[in-house]
Length: 211
Length: 221
Image (cartoon, rainbow over all chains, first blue to last red):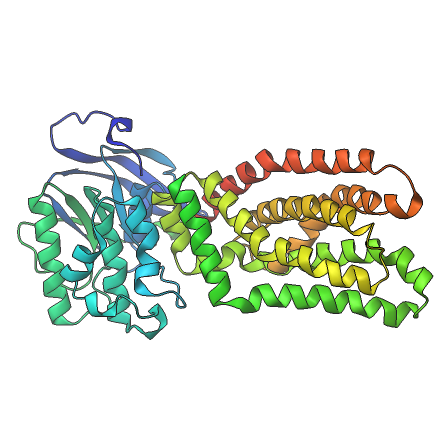
């Protein structure tokens, strides 16, 4: 985890992220066309758009996994990542799966498990967990990091209503502490004062470029 | 540094939990070595003369077996994304995986080469030299193999490409390693071959993790 001093000073106090005019190609297909957004402490931004609009690509670009083909992503704090895969090893117990995240992060494992109602599953191998329980375990990793900026790709996949409520409470607590998050989702989240950013489908552009 | 050790620790746990990968390369090594006496005939002189060469080639091939899954499993379940984002530097992630590969593949091969060597008639006095050479050789192979595995990561038919990439790069290790192991039989000094084998290892030590780190970054992008 990068220490806070390694990040640039934000232009506005509380600013966590600046995305300026980011364009991304996948192969020769335009996926993101001049996307700009900013995120301040306490914000929750919902990314919307049809399938294939580049929501996951935008998250990967913001995280730094992918380099934008033009434009700039400037982060002013650490990030925590929840991809659409759970990254759990089936043979390891829940605690062993999260051990690395616990070592690298700043928050305590029992607290995170308690908040997500996973305490009774701590010593169970991940292969015995249901898909909703695996999703919550992957979310526990985000909580462990202690990073202010959360990037969540479909956090509610496979979760029941009670778990979504629980997730909403955790997210609200994170915002109250000055954190922020960008979420892609297809189901409504129990969050208030969210901002939303709609990504247009660029499927029609492809034919334009190829003609 | 804690993250680096934690990563090795996690990989060792996984290797013990799924022993099949480790066991497969070990059994391959022993079986492959045991086939030579069947094909070459039971002449003790011939086998003693071929012994170190057989062990070296079998070790090289056995090291290749688990490479395909070294980063492949991490890429498929999304762990690699997390390691690239929150773990140590990409080169350190690659180095930790290579170290874990050596501990779970190279080290068992070293131990198994003792009975295999005795079976092929390698003299007890020649064994320490063989083991020393193999120790350096398998370390170099883990480094080279890890580099190649990260480069073909995400490519279609990566499993076929992998040996084609590793085997040419591993030839110097094989040549100097086997030459050092034959020094006892030929009553020559092993110093020159061991020096060159060590040089291969120390060239791989910084270069392979750096190249592999770049390969991993490209694979998740």
